[in-house]
Length: 235
Image 1 (tube, rainbow, N blue to C red):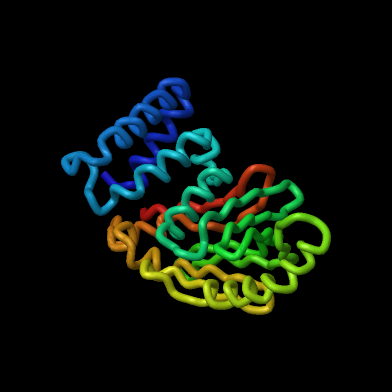
Image 2: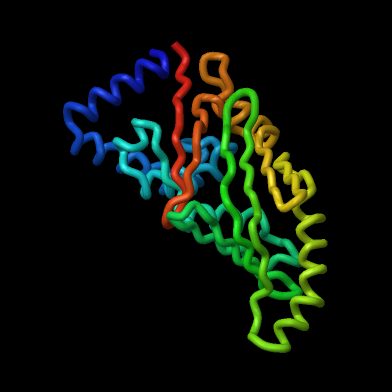
């Protein structure tokens, strides 16, 4: 039986018995989470995917997922960023807040101080041709007390912070994630990261699993980011 047939059966199951379908799906998600360390249930190569996928499942309704709409909560985004900066000696924490105006506030706790970065999501695309997220940074502030002390801190620390951004946001991480920063525009290219991941090496009907889902659009809303997806299920 092909994946497309399984998805079609699942859709009919939900349409005819929505309550039972929801209970079944939730039970499966909980079972996978409980057994993520059991190699007989979860392939060790996919173990690290269980927690984020379960988080997404818990914060999205099944009809929304079926129709290609996924909500990435601030908690989910911050958790992902936390795993990426773990062990970084300079960056202590990063806290993302999303607003319905389409803006994102990023509070960065750095070894030299705390900074607030205002940004807008310009583009988010994932398909076989490219996979990237583009942010436009509109403002950067030093978070400190008011008055003379703040002015002194800004004049002394902001150049250090700008240097930090230029160096930190222009590199390729070990997992293949590319960060490109210039003229207050940050591009995150995750194409190679996906291709080199365990999911990228897994195929379904000779198609890489990472391309079974495409991201067509991303919108910043209160509390997170909404993704519009397209499912590319082989015939």
